[in-house]
Image 1 (cartoon, rainbow, N blue to C red):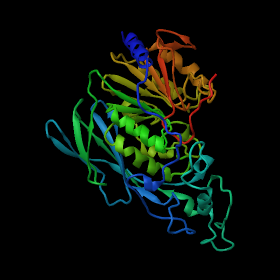
Image 2: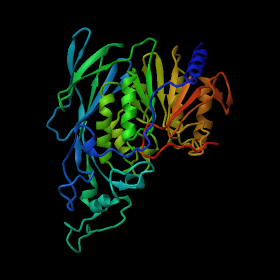
Image 3: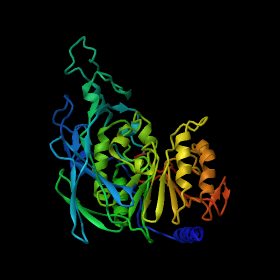
Image 4: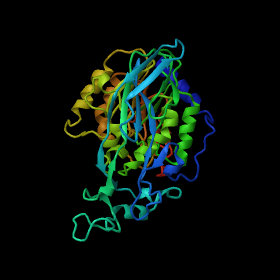
Length: 433
């Protein structure tokens, strides 16, 4: 019955135009001053009065994610530690109210210059220049001759020098507050100390219909902002973001601006994320992603925030890590956890999200996830997974609507959706086999 419903739904969705959205032809990164809530706090010594896109803190950065069918977590940022880690909230229907307290932390890390897309994006005009990065790496205005910190590298690349404090990123204070004992289907108004604004989110109901917003490879361009606007217009029960969030690519300040950009939607619609190559590569090493975008891994008996599961109403959502060690059983923890999770009997749909697609007829990233597919696809078939969501490939593609297994149509296999063109600066991939 579920398979027939999926087939009918996808057949209908492919019958014609389903959205009036058209991708803009230019997708430059948004500068800090174009994102609501971002203020400058420091600049380079060479240009003390200019925005060199490193010197800002973005207040609030609020987003909501689900921990379980009846609990959620609110994440927000403040420039200093004066604000408490607390959320005041009330159920709109009953008027009952409460205040929850949570934890807070901050961290420092080296910036990294790994991706020329920062100053030379594949599509659209750059928001920033190479000269800005060169100036940030230049220490000659403060490091005296003979100092080990003195450098004037005209082409700074890779992980930056720990001896240059100008290339050390200091995060704002990240606050994480869990809201427990929520009512499925109920709406809650909440406020955070960061700005005092009242926002409203709804806990997904436990019955159909359930609406899920889907995206991946979002970034923070003018197109990203439009994609977020369209996601908000859908008024979904939750958004599933299948990896590649900020496209900071080692330049940590862009995690602040991304969260500020996304707050307009994710502060009101619960978002569930999994990490992509832009969260592990380019000196990211999961650090910023794990610090800022919590996942419900503990509640789902996972030992890693990079793979988890949660019920979104009647839909069981499973997130997998595409960047585990798939050689010689290096992924044994994730694989054993997945089988234990999927083996629990459920009546609703099961949706799996990951970053790198198992199936892809685009020439970009072809067969990149083959080792993972060989190890995990039998589990998806065995336990009747309905839909698999991926990103990574910057275009849209859907598998045969009757299901796929081992490269062939199979009515017992999942339907695969690739959703990797959320708006990032690297352009659309249009090279097909």
